[in-house]
Length: 194
Image (cartoon, rainbow, N blue to C red; front, top):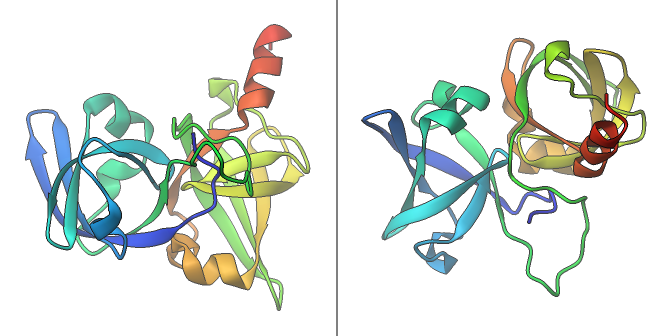
């Protein structure tokens, strides 16, 4: 379980194809605190640490993960948002995040609001995913509040701290991001048959 509060950013050092999987090797300021078999959210995708060597650690993304996320589009030197699992006695500063990406979205607009930024995203309506104004959404692992909500479009506002300490500063119109819709909203929608 995650909260969507990004701990740090990791840089991709190497990407290796292994059958239908991709092995990602990252460098991070928290590598020394990690252990093999630990779960970490990478742009909101829960992946398991499979190897640690010096300042670098490696995770594996299988075909199912690559098909539903933006991970297959990543390149060496790209920056990825990182969050470790929440400890059982930790605070829920964000919202309940599973690290199970539902789909991707495309950034349509980035508007400078002179103190914050509005990001507008479009997602596929056919996936039965929904947003609610003032509800929660996770974008690349970042817990955010929906500002504007339409059928296939929604917007979020990003404060300067989040802009500087996550990979939001790299998102431009046309960028593909990972979305995890609010887990409570998904259960309610399923119970209501929507």
